[in-house]
Image 1 (spheres, rainbow, N blue to C red):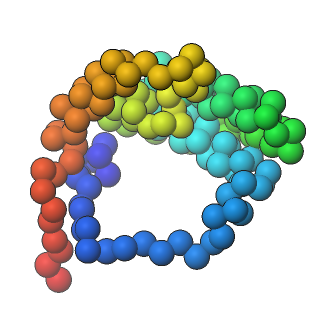
Image 2: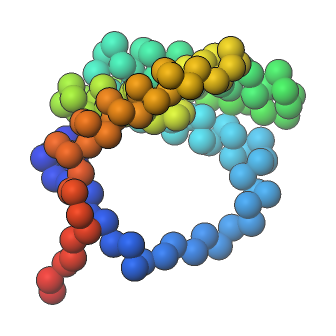
Length: 147
């Protein structure tokens, strides 16, 4: 949507109800599928430099998760599988959109940043940059659909 010049439609009166049990998110299958999909999205949609950084960070997170819980070891080959599939379906978005999501989507940001401890000033600066870039991509207020 953002790449086509469209904006997000905000409808705060709508509430999503997820029907799955939250604990199911901790299964090895969930981790493998989620990791594969993240690598796929990065390789398919992000610009080359952003894609490489995002895939490396997804792989790093999968490795850290596997070290903490051996049951999630299947997430490591899933990164390669997802990246390869994404490269075959390559359709990169505009550079500003790629950069925005590479730098601000938690799953694409380096997990090592969190290992070193919180860098409060860096986090604040990153958020300020993100919010300054938002007006170009998101509406400033809520909107509605007319049918």
